[in-house]
Structure formats: structure tokens, C-alpha cells
Image (cartoon, rainbow, N blue to C red; front, side):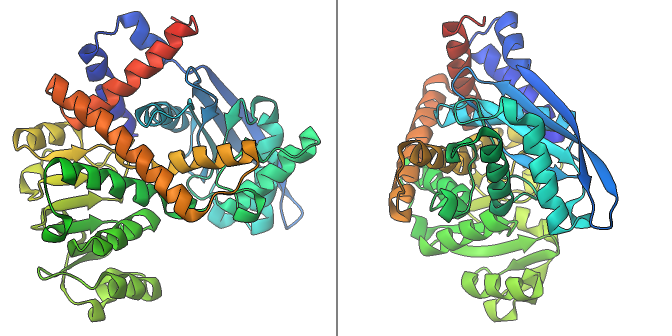
Length: 413
């Protein structure tokens, strides 16, 4: 996956920045453990099917392994390993006491019934239960997995262990110990970081404009929050096209129309004119929010980006080559490992609530999330200013220094 290629480049650069030895860098780049299984489940038609499954426990020097489980036809050992490494860095950037892990099953869930998907969820837990737990490795939802699937996994785990252990998994439904605020945490955290950067630059959000690429859960919520900040949202894009309006779109109307029709291009009541899907990247806007796929801003189109601030909600939307172009133009890129860490941060809050037997209100969770994300931004921004590097370089260097120091203290290096 391209994002992991870029990740390794960033790790190499940050290791040089903080003066890590080859031994220290290699120690971090080697996963602690790769677990494999073949999950065989009964099918509704009376037959059976088998699916490869993985759990990569990458690094737990800072705390229990943490990372989602994805059900996806493209999930394989390499992809899961890459995502586990990224989780380790992301947790360290926001300084929460988790390590990095990831799980995956190579399956197309669209070809399974709900009953079959739940059977697969139970089989996954049976295969890896000995290596999971509240103090060991805490899974969560990921691509094509849901709170309901987490509920099934929790049920299977508690059946095996013979006791209630809600803290063994996060992203659960609220009645089973899930956390309020988890559904919007990724965008909420990203916008909190953006607000902190705007304060640093003495910019008034109500005098700025924004363009958002990708209107899934995180992108749509980011658009709503920007609108609530009185930022003029001038472009909204999905995979089918871009809706542009220089005077500002009616965000609520556009999102409501998309919910019905499946595309922003059908949102006539929201105003704007139609353009192709990539047009959002070159829209005249102060803030660009890539919240869709990786590799959206490259060396080929970086010069056409008109925004002075890029908020990476997607994973790896800006390539290293594009980073160089944007740096030369003094574009502030808020990196994905910081910007989209709100989800794992609220998963951490869910884990705490489960451990101490409390339920926090949405208002409390959102306030704690803002505080955590703004604090993480402050540390990254100060590091960047002290070293004269970009926010991405600072985030990776800060994270790697924390992980390696924890490894030294645990005598792993």
C-alpha cells in the first residue's frame, strides 16, 4: 500500500532528525508478533467457507496493543502490518498509553449474510482470544466492521473467559459500554487541531473558506463543524463529482441531498455548480480537507493547490513529493497521524470508562477530546518551530522518540 511506503519514508527522516541509531530504528520497524489463522464458518446454504485472518501486534512499549479489525477482500499480512505500525505512531503522537496493532480478514463482507458475518466475528475471536484482552490487545472497528460486530466479538470473548470484560474491545454500542462521541470523534478531533493552528496563525475561522473532499462519516462531520464555525464552505466533493459555490454552499442541504441521492451533484437546493471529482483539490479555498483516499495530492497537482492549510483527515492523502512542493510554498499541512487521531483517542476514553465503571456524557467526552487534541497539536507545533521542520516531520519525530524511549526503558534496545 502506498501509504505504508510513505510511512517508511517519514520514519526514516524522523529517525535521522532525532539521531536514532540503525539498531534503534530497526527495533521499531520490526513487528513484535504476527498472528495468523484460517477461519472456517458455516454458510447459510449448509456449506462452509474459509478465510485467512491476521492480527499484527506491532509494538507495545507504550502500553497494550491497540487497533481495529477490518473485513476486506484486500486485507493481507502486508497491509495489516503497515496499518499496525501506523497505529503505534498515531497513539504516540497524541501521547496515549497504547501501542499499535491491526487485524484483518480477507473477505468480501458484501457476499455474506449478517449471520455469516457474525459467525466470522466469533471465529476471529476464538482464533486469537489468548492474545487479546483489556491489558494485552484491544481491538476496535475498522473497514466494514461495525459496533454490532464488536458486540458479537465481545460476547464471544466473554463466553470464552467466563466473565464480563467490556474493556477488551472498543467501538461498542452504547448499551454495552461504548462511548458517547465515538461516532464523530475523528472529525471532532481534526477540527480541534485545526482550530488550534488557526489561533497560532491569528486567523479568524469566520473569515476563511474551506473545501472538503470525501463525505463519508468523517468528511461530512468536518463540513458540518466548519459550517458551525462560520467558515465558508465553498466546495464539497464525493467520488462522483464536486459541487462548488464561491459564495458558500448550504452544507446541511447538500449533505441531506447526498443522503437521499448518493451524490453531491444532485444537491440543487444547496446551490453551486458541478465539476469533476478532482476539482475540489484546486478550489480557491483557505483550507483544504482531504477526507477520502490516499495519494490525492501528488507532485503532479501540488502546484495547483490554492489552499494555505491542508487538514489530512484521510490516511496518506499527500505524497512525500507533494509535501516538498507544499513546504516550498509555505503551505501548512496538518498530518494524518495527528489530524485523524481523534478516533483512537476516544477509544482510549472508552477503555478508561470500562475499566473504572463510569459512563461519560457526550459533552464530557468532546471536552476531553478537544483538550487532548489541542495539547497534542501544541507539542507537535512547538517541536516543529524549535527544529525548523514541518508539522509532519515533527509529529513523526516526536512519536518515534516516545516509542524508542519506552523501548529503552523496557530494555528492548
